Length: 177
Image (cartoon, rainbow, N blue to C red; front, side, top):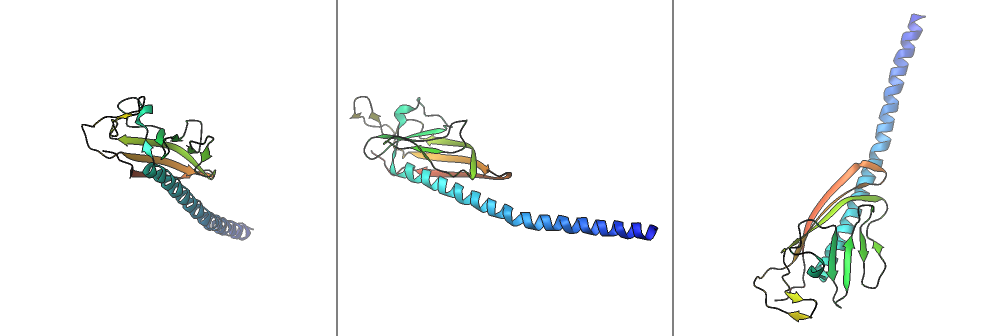
């Protein structure tokens, strides 16, 4: 009788080890797939925002002066002089692009959740030296090209342990002297 109990215990321990290994090996590839999905989505989101910053002008008029070091909304002026923006509110899990034509477009998919984003704009004062209210142009006392540093933190919607932090600096190609 004791031999049967001992053999059952050994069988049970081996069975539990095999089950744990099976679960571990089946979940590991899924986690890798989710991580790759998160990296791809964040890369696309970051490149989309970088492209908008490169091809548009930063709208310094909508920020208090100086601009500030951490903004969750980036105001831009497109090539036609219309206002656009990139934004994420505290209640949203996506980053949205608001084109000048109206409406909004979610940049990232619902597979990822944006935990935080910040746009740090340099220089802190308007290097374009435009007077937006009169449409006139004033000579600047400094010579600096506008740039934005984007910090973004996100996690996978199905697994909060899969988290990614990205940072990049983007220089606006539109620079007037």
